[in-house]
Amino acid sequence: MSQLKIAIIGCGWLGLPLAKKLIKENFIVKGSTTSKEKISVLKTEKIEPFLIDLNKNLDKEILNSFLKNVDVLIINIPPKIRKEKTINYYSKIKKITSNNLIKKINNIIFISSTSVYGPKQGKINSQTIPSPDTINGKEILKTEKLFDNKNNTIIRFGGLINETRNPLNYLIKKQEVLNSDAPINYIHLEDCIGIILSVIKKNKWGKIYLGVTPFHPTKKNYFDNLCEKKRIKKLNFSSLKTLINKEINDEKIYKDLNYKFEFPNL
Image 1: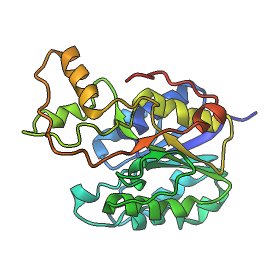
Image 2: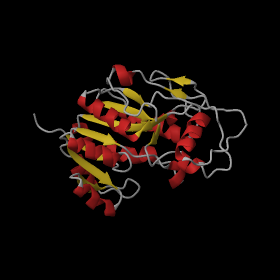
Image 3: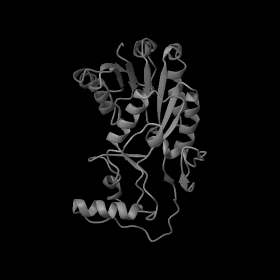
């Protein structure tokens, strides 16, 4: 059996360690970056590098080379609507899906977000109909429709964390933190990678998975405990009523993928 060829658009915080893991698992990996400086990093990790920036005039020849002879394409590009101050996420992703070579790719994994669900949708599972209330969420949900067929799988990840990346890093700078009783909906980087790998290995296509660790203490409890572990001052939570009740779980992660979380308690 020939080695599966996988292309990852977006070798950043999630994409690069994912690519490294796929190579360890004996897949052939292509990876894209928007940074010329990162090309050498990808080469060092035995990832075939491509410079692709969907914000600029796209070099179609480079994109063609990137997509050529690929079995699985992983699209891992965050919207960055707030940062870029423009709503063009759908049109950016459409640049990829409108390429003729897309039809020759067996399967696509689109990395989405749980921001497609509104903050007051309560207990959510993969059967829950999304009702976003942010520009980000609405644009992501619109973009998901580009991948709505039996050959593609969408993974909606919750808040992405690891040992160095955590909302605490910016919340600690706030004078006051809202929604103290809201449940957390996070997932560790290693579990993101594990779920993506399970989808590929088990050929679970035409699915939507919600990548959130089934661990939902209140925001206050979670960050109070984290501050104690780090021996730093606790966050100052507002006494205003909590307006968010979104709590996300997906039994299909266990039943369909037979996946066991490596970081069940974050």
